[in-house]
Image 1 (cartoon, rainbow, N blue to C red):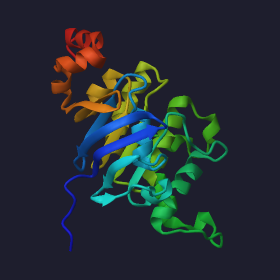
Image 2: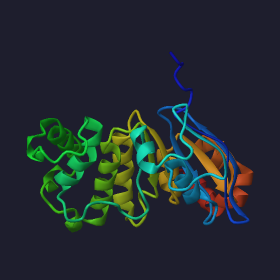
Image 3: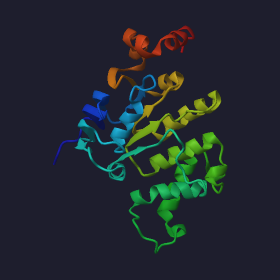
Image 4: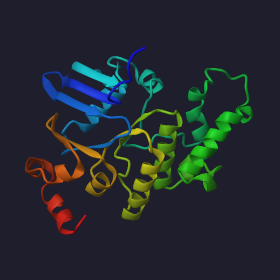
Length: 260
């Protein structure tokens, strides 16, 4: 029997080139089970490319991606998902003409063992219905049970997408700019929601809002020009002169002055 993996997600000398242009330049990153890690960096740093490599949308030019010790390079996104990794996107990705409850029920079917069968009425799948109900309460949308997803507010749609993302029971969650486009009050509530729904899970998130980053992450990976400039605790990253010069700059000084 093999020993449990030391890391939930590990990137080893990961590289990605498009033609002659190298976008990801030898990224090494090791994330422990249950850690919350934020990936930050300037526009064009390679953050989205990194997410696409991890989730299988892009194939790496070289290097390895390990999920709980298993190499997942070359696998399709749905295969990686079934191995325990799920992601959300910058653009909200939901079923607009299904209700909140129906969206969530769809997300749990595969993890509960329901495959490509249309012989059963969904209303009779008591375990799927119960799990969808639990998710709906978890993301605070139980009062919107029968509302079509297209009629939710933007923040509610993002919350629904989080519910769908965790619905399959994945232990590693990737969130791509989860609070983009939200007001300050919505963002504050959303940070609390993310903490609650990812409790006990491993979280990797790309985020531009430094308030979100420092309020959510156990560790921060700073990516600049396709390389990891720093990977450390928020306080250590905040104090890192190279990071301040390369990316954070005055925004950190302002936050320090404000006592955040």
